[in-house]
Image (cartoon, rainbow, N blue to C red; front, top):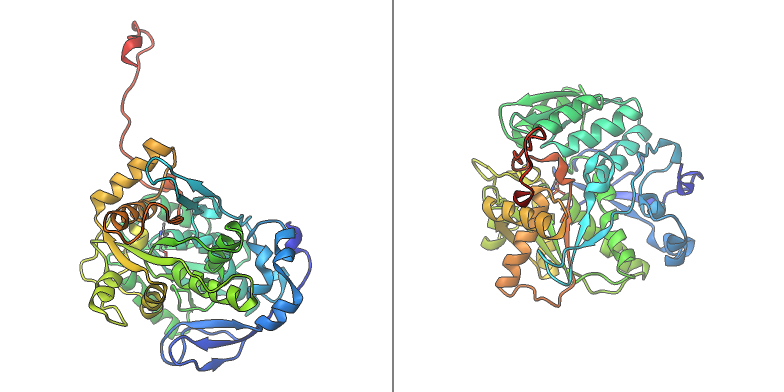
Length: 407
Ligand SMILES: *Cc1c(COP(=O)(O)O)cnc(C)c1O
């Protein structure tokens, strides 16, 4: 086990707070949404964190997710079920992206996606607070991460996914010990069933942002970026946005780091990237709305961002606007072209959602929202190996004469 995990440290959590009304909630109790029906945010005694540790303390530790222990909510280290949450690399893609474009490759995390960051935290907190049964709607990767971590610590899980969820996701969820059901609907239809069961007291609802701790796990993407960039931040971040947990989490991380005095007040432009076939945040951004209406008949190859309605819509929109960024939609053909370009030109296999960020970056470059000198980070949120790829059907018959010129 990593040495960051060997000693019990007190957490610096003071309370939780409703993201819309600011109403205060006690720490160390099980919470879902706030009374206003909105996500709860975890608050810390950052003055105490500042006195306890410094940037040097962090830098002296192994680089994994648990180096940020004091900025995370788990009280008892024994409640953490780790599968090896490494710091993910920033991979240049000079040919398909450009000289200043780095891909944060989250496909290297346990269960092959950045859902591991959120779920390792949420499951540890569920364990700490005595939860025995969890249900969750998923487009695939979140269910897989939940299954892995919950099974590992003996929490029962029921996972509902749309019936056209990539086959490999459904199978990995089942293989990692959850009971998985395909539902003839979209993720919010699955969420409605989960919510009904939770209201009947059958299980705890682990939907995106309906429990407070996934954001804290996803926040580590922002903490990591700060450390990887030498305590400055990149100029722009392109984030494939479904429920928006990661974008909201990173925005929160930057704020906490500034309050600690570890970074300055400059922020990256945050670009929320969606698929044209499911772009509720983009529509609301363009209309100047604070909340986003449900997107009807959602459809895209990028399953992870096929989220017709997000509970944290206003938090995503707020962060994007405050940052001077934008919400951008890209079509499926552009997404698939970007995936192919990164793979064939730079040898990096992106997931379709990651491809969407590359396509959106190219769009932003063409329309002058960013320029070539900007240091840009694109998020590749899952390993490309989980998704269908074009066929490669050529075969050689070794018993016949080989036409070497044709190879
Ligand atoms: C879940 C997921 C997303 C969207 O992440 P959010 O933080 O929920 O917006 C993007 N890409 C992939 C591969 C995902 O699994």
